[in-house]
Length: 209
Ligand SMILES: [Fe+2]
Ligand SMILES: [Fe+2]
Image 1: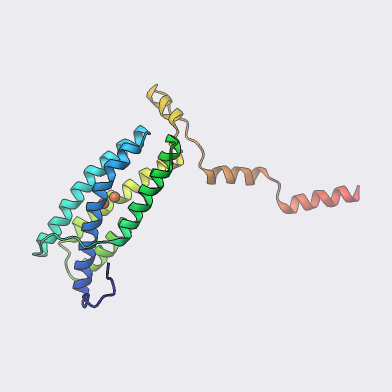
Image 2 (image 1 turned 45 degrees about the vertical axis):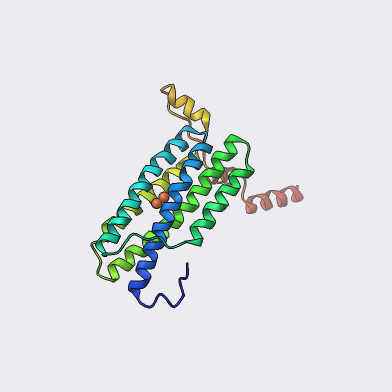
């Protein structure tokens, strides 16, 4: 990535570098998504990946519009961060046989990608504003909104634990039973459990009796 190499002298260089980095990342993501679609057995997850592949293709076009606004040729800068995230995701997929575990692993791998993109778009928006390139900002913001929406949909799927039973019920016209998240379950357990003070009080009472 060469973030701190001496090729980057000005804020403008940093901005251009960030743009090329993200252009490379989006292209790599577009290449990886078909494999993730193939491996996702959950219909909602698969449809989500298919939708996001189309969005990613649109995002690449928006980045090309940014290059055009800057009178620059669209060019990617090799980005080891996204390569690492994607490589880790694909290595994980190679290790999983069970379809349900695969869906859950895919969600986590995809969220790592979305979070990376969200941080990068956030930086580019800030840098474009600082450089007075407000013409580029709406294009970055459009991409950022899609990344955030995708991340939220992945979170919702993870919270349902990609529950195929829930989807069957939904297909029958009944509302799917929303599974409690692990946090909600922990909270309920904690509420049901007597507090330490109460437990100590009960112990003392037993000793006194
Ligand atoms: Fe993207
Ligand atoms: Fe994305």
